[in-house]
Amino acid sequence: MQINPRILLVMLAAALTSCGPGAAPMTVEQVPPPRPAIAGITVDSIEQLDAVAAAVDKLSAEVTVRLVFDPRMDPGYYATAVDRLGEHANLMGELLDSEAMTLLDADGVRERANAYLTAFSDKIAIWEIGNELNGKWVGDSPAEIDAKALAAFEVVKQHGGSTAITLNYWSSPDCYDHPWEQTVPFAQQLPDKLKSEVDYLLLSVYETACDPPQQPSAQDLAGTLTELGRIFPQAYLGIGEIGAQASQDGPKIKDPTMAERQRIAERYLGMHRELRSRVGSRFVGGYFWWYFCRDAVPYDRPGNLWPTLDRLLTELQR
Image (cartoon, rainbow, N blue to C red):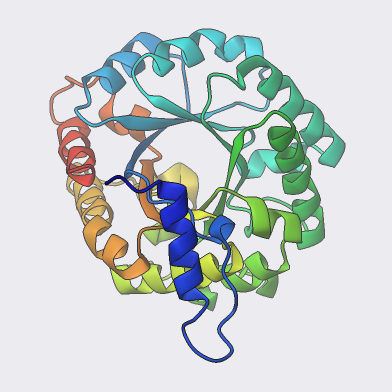
């Protein structure tokens, strides 16, 4: 006999409410149903669209491409890219990269979001409404940043879309300058509407974002994701960015060797099963290697990272 999945979730929720005295009631809406792992890459430039599309098409996994929308460009610039990449992958649209958030006020973000949703709401599955929000390069204060993220969120929801927020993972106070940048406290102060309704909560994890560099373990990342899961009870949880940063990312960062790029890819994509085990069924992977265009395009360039990413992304979905 088949059991309706929604009825099964109701039964599970009822069971969870009886887990002992003082247990907080849990509704069906607070138990996101399990979903397949997301095998993510990031496309931050479409200048070589043919080569990028070929590299995406050749990947063995069912990938999700985060497409970074340049703040100087209107939706028309991306129309062909959305169609081409959408033939080979699921799409996540990043309305504004982290530093680009400073270029617009909340009304400007709302206007931009409406333009992009009007153009692509039926073609893009997930909309990233805020990237690395707890970074000083995104704004001068949490209040300023919150208002912009909320403006984007409201537009996406008006169009019936799914939303994602990415926060920086910081292993220690050495990683940031202001107390408000600390990951979990920043998440706690976000507007209630974001905390209760955002669909995906992701972490940006870069070793060289900290000085000295951080190297979080799966246990470290799972601990932070579990805390964030309590703050965002309806959200899937995952990793929103990884990669090997280069000299343009900071004055103390050296350009990575291919061996270093491979090490980072193997380390963090290789954590997937342990993260899933520690965080639970709400953990959906992601990873979204930021430097796909730099490291893996063209896909047949000798000595590049494409074969490593292809293998690791495929393993996520086995």
